[in-house]
Image 1 (cartoon, rainbow over the protein chains, first blue to last red):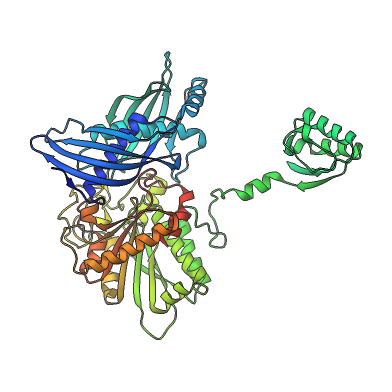
Image 2: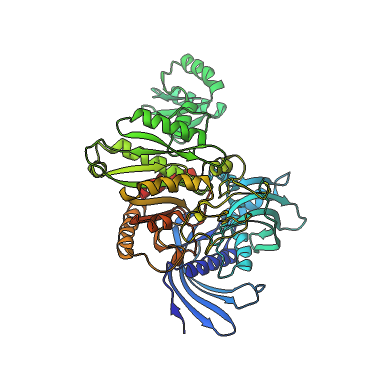
Length: 222
Length: 384
């Protein structure tokens, strides 16, 4: 039987962050990033020999338009024992997400028509600024980081994208856009900042894919 | 670039103006389109600097009278934009509380604040950091014959949480600007003194400006300088080293070589210990997460005055939400976030300070530590 978890409880907020990351990966684009607005309800079930399952009711907001929100239910199953199996996440959206076809196509065409491959660093900068033309690049990283967060989360982690250290476009002969990102993830539980490399593919009709990713060694401070 | 105001008087003038618009490709502000230019109606037209003379000559030649509405468009645009960072800046006339400031500017700010408000503010030395930087707090105290209780607030114990020192500065400014006119603030000051430490972890803060924006700890060297930094908020003598810490210097939550091993911790702890009988409330400001956290992190056992602590915190969260709708969660660290020992908030409560809170300011993770400057004002206003 599933028991209610107080909404402010650390475990509930970690599961909610994970579900949000997964959802963002599945539904996001350079024109649409989703963030957790609030956790409405959380229940937890211990399944013998399997793991811990959370039943969540979430309210998500559009990163670009905070007034645009959508409700969602999600189930998160953290597997017992074996740390290499990512959690199972399922969700149902209660409502429509804003259509971003126009913005996505504008971004797609803009990048396709660049003569030199796009290169950028430190998004946002130290003061939190993101130049407007970099906003889709940032959102694409936000969406792709949802994949990395999903794949690497446990009940003892709570990841957020902290910053894009570096991004480089990789020219392709097919219709996809490819970007090589070096991002910094922040884990709220350990407080660690973890550099992570990810190769991201995107096409307006085909969604976001992370084709390769690897955790990087922490840059030892001097 | 200039903006002209013209009222065409004849149809020939209208035609000429339409001609000028299309040949010189001028930017029509009013009306929107050349075909809507009418006699007797206002025309506002923006003219690029190199064409201003030519325009004036042409208007004069056709006996069209004009007025210069905006003599310098760029200047007007610049004035309406948030100021660019210039260094070093004088302070605080024109000190921008809606920008993040490096440590040298914060030092200058403290000196100026005391100078400009000497009837209320005194600056006091607390101690030195690992790298020999001087730590100061500001005492805001209305002269009175009765001894007053103290509210202590420190900011910037974790270097990367820039919104925190920004809030301390904002707080001081608000008190000083409004204590005469705001009855609530004036009543506070009749009965309480505020002690504000704008940046506790000075070395770390400087490091986060110069080398690594996401640095958290102080800059104490370990293992012959191959590893740096103790988490100051794991270094206090409150169940030190027991839970939620690492004994490894390379960790962000390294608790140091012993309780109060760090000079910054000692400077604060010694002062607060001395004054503890007069301190009513200990506040420590962090980011991010939007929480008001009560003791303890080191155990789930509630503190003795838990009900009262929660009640006050919940009222604070409600007031905060009332401003911009920002929701803060309230509760003990060990339940809401994670276990941790050696925090300053736990220590303050354990030595007898009844009200001890950690504030985790905006946001929820969308920007995290790198909160954009346009959120400084709303964050500070709601927290105030």
